[in-house]
Length: 221
Ligand code: C5P
Image (cartoon, rainbow, N blue to C red; front, side, top):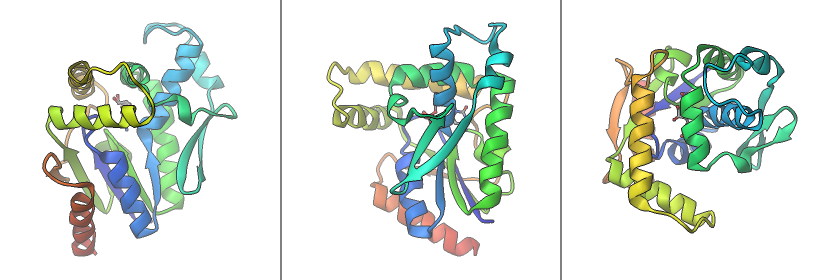
Protein backbone atom coordinates (compact mmCIF):
# COMPACT_ATOMS: atom_id res chain seq x y z
CA UNK A 1 0.00 0.00 0.00
CA UNK A 2 1.14 3.58 -0.64
CA UNK A 3 1.10 6.13 2.10
CA UNK A 4 1.82 9.82 2.51
CA UNK A 5 2.59 11.11 6.00
CA UNK A 6 1.94 14.76 6.84
CA UNK A 7 3.04 16.02 10.23
CA UNK A 8 3.34 19.47 11.67
CA UNK A 9 2.12 21.89 14.33
CA UNK A 10 -1.48 22.95 14.95
CA UNK A 11 -3.18 24.97 12.23
CA UNK A 12 -0.48 24.46 9.59
CA UNK A 13 -3.19 23.45 7.11
CA UNK A 14 -2.42 19.73 7.30
CA UNK A 15 -5.99 18.54 7.11
CA UNK A 16 -7.12 20.79 4.22
CA UNK A 17 -4.03 19.80 2.28
CA UNK A 18 -4.25 16.11 3.12
CA UNK A 19 -7.92 16.13 2.12
CA UNK A 20 -7.22 17.79 -1.23
CA UNK A 21 -4.28 15.48 -1.90
CA UNK A 22 -6.22 12.34 -1.11
CA UNK A 23 -8.95 13.40 -3.51
CA UNK A 24 -6.47 14.03 -6.31
CA UNK A 25 -4.64 10.75 -5.73
CA UNK A 26 -7.69 8.62 -5.00
CA UNK A 27 -6.30 7.78 -1.55
CA UNK A 28 -8.17 7.66 1.76
CA UNK A 29 -7.62 10.63 4.07
CA UNK A 30 -7.02 9.80 7.72
CA UNK A 31 -7.15 12.62 10.25
CA UNK A 32 -5.43 11.16 13.33
CA UNK A 33 -5.90 14.37 15.36
CA UNK A 34 -9.64 13.70 15.28
CA UNK A 35 -9.00 10.35 16.98
CA UNK A 36 -7.06 12.00 19.83
CA UNK A 37 -9.81 14.57 20.05
CA UNK A 38 -12.41 11.78 20.34
CA UNK A 39 -10.43 10.26 23.24
CA UNK A 40 -10.34 13.70 24.89
CA UNK A 41 -14.09 14.04 24.40
CA UNK A 42 -14.64 10.61 25.96
CA UNK A 43 -12.40 11.41 28.94
CA UNK A 44 -14.15 14.76 29.39
CA UNK A 45 -17.52 13.00 29.45
CA UNK A 46 -16.13 10.64 32.08
CA UNK A 47 -14.72 13.47 34.13
CA UNK A 48 -11.08 12.42 33.76
CA UNK A 49 -8.96 15.41 34.73
CA UNK A 50 -5.47 14.26 33.77
CA UNK A 51 -3.13 11.36 33.15
CA UNK A 52 -2.92 10.43 36.84
CA UNK A 53 -6.56 9.28 36.96
CA UNK A 54 -6.59 5.60 37.98
CA UNK A 55 -9.58 4.86 35.73
CA UNK A 56 -7.73 5.57 32.49
CA UNK A 57 -6.79 2.00 31.64
CA UNK A 58 -10.27 0.60 32.35
CA UNK A 59 -11.90 3.46 30.44
CA UNK A 60 -9.63 2.79 27.48
CA UNK A 61 -10.90 -0.79 27.42
CA UNK A 62 -14.43 0.56 27.07
CA UNK A 63 -13.46 2.99 24.37
CA UNK A 64 -14.06 2.02 20.81
CA UNK A 65 -13.09 4.37 18.03
CA UNK A 66 -13.65 3.73 14.37
CA UNK A 67 -13.88 5.89 11.32
CA UNK A 68 -16.19 5.92 8.36
CA UNK A 69 -16.59 8.10 5.30
CA UNK A 70 -19.60 10.07 4.18
CA UNK A 71 -19.23 11.86 0.83
CA UNK A 72 -15.48 11.48 1.21
CA UNK A 73 -15.47 13.14 4.65
CA UNK A 74 -14.06 11.29 7.64
CA UNK A 75 -16.48 10.70 10.49
CA UNK A 76 -15.25 9.60 13.90
CA UNK A 77 -17.43 7.06 15.65
CA UNK A 78 -16.99 6.86 19.40
CA UNK A 79 -18.71 3.87 20.98
CA UNK A 80 -21.29 3.85 18.19
CA UNK A 81 -21.93 7.60 18.16
CA UNK A 82 -20.79 9.97 15.43
CA UNK A 83 -18.96 12.67 17.44
CA UNK A 84 -17.27 14.41 14.49
CA UNK A 85 -19.15 17.68 14.95
CA UNK A 86 -18.12 17.96 18.59
CA UNK A 87 -14.38 17.77 18.18
CA UNK A 88 -13.12 20.97 16.58
CA UNK A 89 -13.24 23.38 19.54
CA UNK A 90 -9.82 24.51 20.81
CA UNK A 91 -10.86 23.36 24.27
CA UNK A 92 -10.98 19.79 22.93
CA UNK A 93 -7.68 20.32 21.07
CA UNK A 94 -6.05 21.34 24.33
CA UNK A 95 -7.39 18.30 26.14
CA UNK A 96 -6.38 16.06 23.22
CA UNK A 97 -2.85 17.38 23.58
CA UNK A 98 -2.87 16.63 27.31
CA UNK A 99 -4.19 13.08 26.98
CA UNK A 100 -2.12 12.28 23.88
CA UNK A 101 0.97 12.26 26.09
CA UNK A 102 -0.31 9.05 27.77
CA UNK A 103 1.42 5.94 26.42
CA UNK A 104 -1.61 3.63 26.49
CA UNK A 105 -3.74 6.18 24.62
CA UNK A 106 -1.12 6.42 21.88
CA UNK A 107 -0.70 2.63 21.66
CA UNK A 108 -4.39 2.15 21.09
CA UNK A 109 -4.68 4.81 18.40
CA UNK A 110 -1.41 3.99 16.63
CA UNK A 111 -2.57 0.35 16.28
CA UNK A 112 -5.82 1.52 14.67
CA UNK A 113 -3.97 3.94 12.37
CA UNK A 114 -1.53 1.27 11.17
CA UNK A 115 -4.36 -1.15 10.54
CA UNK A 116 -6.13 1.38 8.34
CA UNK A 117 -2.96 2.06 6.35
CA UNK A 118 -2.47 -1.66 5.73
CA UNK A 119 -5.76 -1.91 3.90
CA UNK A 120 -5.79 1.23 1.77
CA UNK A 121 -3.58 3.84 0.17
CA UNK A 122 -3.68 6.71 2.64
CA UNK A 123 -2.78 10.30 3.22
CA UNK A 124 -2.47 10.45 6.99
CA UNK A 125 -1.89 13.61 9.00
CA UNK A 126 -0.88 14.10 12.62
CA UNK A 127 2.20 14.63 14.75
CA UNK A 128 4.03 11.28 14.72
CA UNK A 129 3.00 9.76 11.40
CA UNK A 130 6.37 9.97 9.67
CA UNK A 131 8.34 9.17 12.83
CA UNK A 132 6.28 6.44 14.51
CA UNK A 133 3.03 5.39 12.83
CA UNK A 134 4.24 4.93 9.25
CA UNK A 135 8.05 5.07 9.31
CA UNK A 136 8.09 3.51 5.82
CA UNK A 137 5.66 5.97 4.26
CA UNK A 138 6.36 6.60 0.58
CA UNK A 139 6.51 10.35 1.12
CA UNK A 140 6.83 12.36 4.32
CA UNK A 141 6.04 16.04 4.65
CA UNK A 142 6.59 18.25 7.66
CA UNK A 143 4.22 21.15 7.11
CA UNK A 144 4.62 24.34 9.06
CA UNK A 145 3.72 28.04 8.93
CA UNK A 146 4.29 31.02 11.21
CA UNK A 147 2.18 31.06 14.36
CA UNK A 148 0.48 34.29 13.17
CA UNK A 149 -0.63 32.66 9.92
CA UNK A 150 -1.72 29.50 11.71
CA UNK A 151 -3.76 31.49 14.26
CA UNK A 152 -5.43 33.42 11.44
CA UNK A 153 -6.39 30.19 9.66
CA UNK A 154 -7.85 28.73 12.86
CA UNK A 155 -9.70 31.98 13.51
CA UNK A 156 -11.27 31.93 10.03
CA UNK A 157 -12.14 28.24 10.37
CA UNK A 158 -13.96 28.87 13.65
CA UNK A 159 -15.65 32.01 12.31
CA UNK A 160 -16.95 30.09 9.35
CA UNK A 161 -18.39 27.50 11.72
CA UNK A 162 -20.42 30.22 13.39
CA UNK A 163 -18.29 30.90 16.48
CA UNK A 164 -18.35 34.55 17.46
CA UNK A 165 -16.52 35.49 20.68
CA UNK A 166 -13.06 34.95 19.11
CA UNK A 167 -9.76 36.62 19.97
CA UNK A 168 -7.01 35.98 17.43
CA UNK A 169 -4.19 36.70 19.92
CA UNK A 170 -5.67 34.25 22.37
CA UNK A 171 -5.90 31.65 19.60
CA UNK A 172 -2.23 32.23 18.74
CA UNK A 173 -1.18 31.84 22.39
CA UNK A 174 -3.12 28.60 22.71
CA UNK A 175 -1.62 27.23 19.50
CA UNK A 176 1.92 28.06 20.64
CA UNK A 177 1.32 26.43 24.04
CA UNK A 178 -0.15 23.31 22.46
CA UNK A 179 2.77 22.96 20.04
CA UNK A 180 5.25 23.31 22.88
CA UNK A 181 3.52 20.56 24.81
CA UNK A 182 3.37 18.33 21.71
CA UNK A 183 7.05 18.93 20.89
CA UNK A 184 8.28 18.34 24.40
CA UNK A 185 6.30 15.31 25.53
CA UNK A 186 8.27 12.16 26.24
CA UNK A 187 6.45 9.71 23.97
CA UNK A 188 6.31 10.36 20.23
CA UNK A 189 6.88 14.12 20.37
CA UNK A 190 6.09 16.24 17.34
CA UNK A 191 9.23 16.44 15.24
CA UNK A 192 10.31 16.28 11.65
CA UNK A 193 11.32 12.79 10.54
CA UNK A 194 14.88 12.67 9.20
CA UNK A 195 13.59 11.77 5.76
CA UNK A 196 10.67 14.23 5.69
CA UNK A 197 10.51 17.29 3.41
CA UNK A 198 10.01 20.56 5.27
CA UNK A 199 7.40 22.85 3.76
CA UNK A 200 6.57 26.31 5.11
CA UNK A 201 3.10 27.21 3.88
CA UNK A 202 2.99 30.74 5.39
CA UNK A 203 3.11 32.44 1.99
CA UNK A 204 1.57 29.67 -0.08
CA UNK A 205 -2.02 29.05 -1.07
CA UNK A 206 -3.57 25.65 -0.47
CA UNK A 207 -3.41 24.91 -4.19
CA UNK A 208 0.30 25.79 -4.30
CA UNK A 209 1.08 23.44 -1.43
CA UNK A 210 -0.98 20.65 -2.99
CA UNK A 211 0.76 21.09 -6.37
CA UNK A 212 4.15 21.07 -4.70
CA UNK A 213 3.40 17.82 -2.87
CA UNK A 214 1.91 16.24 -6.00
CA UNK A 215 5.14 17.00 -7.86
CA UNK A 216 7.06 15.31 -5.03
CA UNK A 217 4.78 12.27 -5.32
CA UNK A 218 5.63 12.05 -9.03
CA UNK A 219 9.34 12.29 -8.30
CA UNK A 220 9.14 9.54 -5.69
CA UNK A 221 7.47 7.16 -8.13
O1 C5P B 1 -4.34 17.88 14.66
P1 C5P B 1 -5.23 18.21 15.82
O2 C5P B 1 -5.17 19.65 16.23
O3 C5P B 1 -6.64 17.77 15.60
O4 C5P B 1 -4.67 17.33 17.03
C1 C5P B 1 -5.11 17.50 18.36
C2 C5P B 1 -4.02 17.02 19.31
O5 C5P B 1 -3.90 15.60 19.20
C3 C5P B 1 -2.60 17.54 19.02
O6 C5P B 1 -2.34 18.78 19.64
C4 C5P B 1 -1.72 16.43 19.56
O7 C5P B 1 -1.47 16.59 20.93
C5 C5P B 1 -2.56 15.19 19.38
N1 C5P B 1 -2.11 14.38 18.26
C6 C5P B 1 -1.05 13.54 18.47
N2 C5P B 1 -0.63 12.70 17.48
C7 C5P B 1 -1.25 12.69 16.29
C8 C5P B 1 -2.32 13.58 16.04
C9 C5P B 1 -2.72 14.43 17.05
O8 C5P B 1 -0.46 13.51 19.54
N3 C5P B 1 -0.84 11.84 15.35
